[in-house]
Length: 425
Image 1: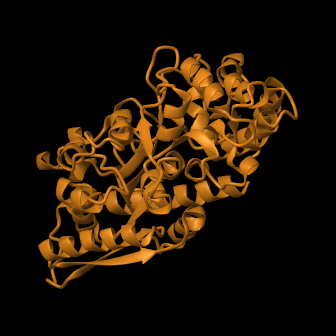
Image 2: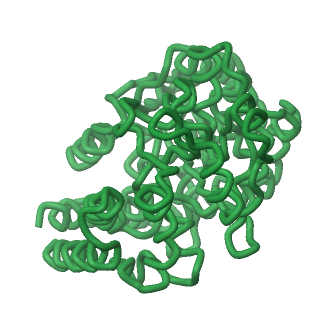
């Protein structure tokens, strides 16, 4: 009931605000076109909220904001680092309910459908001009922030897909090539495995990493905002992951070898291959400088290329009193100039194709496979109930991965529990 109550409160707030803004007709258009400094000519302050990043990312963001303020001397940006990402949305929701939400803030694609539905976000379509070049964005990433009404509620600031990271030395010693298909990957993983010392593949047994595999046989993880992952086609698609762990003994999750995540497994030599995102590149280069590793696009499934994408957008609070200034900020941060500064060190990948090309990421030996995946990726997002669906899937999938119960049985129970929770919201 708590989630439903929150949606109701925010829905009422947006209805009330919509009535006020449209009371005289064309209120939103006037807000969009008013002079940034208003009638007083004073500097406008815009609040920008996000979660904390590593020191390099924080420095890059501040550098980008400094450049924005130089070009927009009548706008002052107040940066608010709210919390770590895990607590971030709870804080944002609370502030929005209390009427103290920031003008502009980060929104993960995973959370976007539910927040868009409440009506608390400003549609950005009317602010866009031709020189902003919407077609320059990778389409799957842009579409992640479109509402059911067809309006765009956010522009993606960066992203990562998943790629195959592999230990070049281990591959050479085993005399194997980088796998092009999942069938090849399974065979290569067997050859790379050395008892319990080295496993061929490090696996993250969670829906955020497995979604694209789960739907590769034609089944659906989510249907009409409800869990449907007990579909036999989903079970069939995921069974090879279980079999690699229990039958082949060639796959393992990080906790089973004393690691925290895939990048650490690869760096420590406990896995010859892992499936990770762009974040693993600087980690491996900094933490394991002597490791010779490569990346490749993920192996094809059923003859098709597939991967996941994770993206975050800048969105505007519908209750912002400085919408024109807020848009100026969003358009700079997600425009070509601002995005180039923010992604210049390779910690994040640019969502604009032109920026990726200008920075050379589409040709970079390590990042090119990640960039290539953006055009065909499945974005980590599927309706407002995905958080509930994910929690239940993960709990039961791990039990199947560890051999505690058959996969079909585990997923049936998880689906039933998830849908009960959704119905009880």
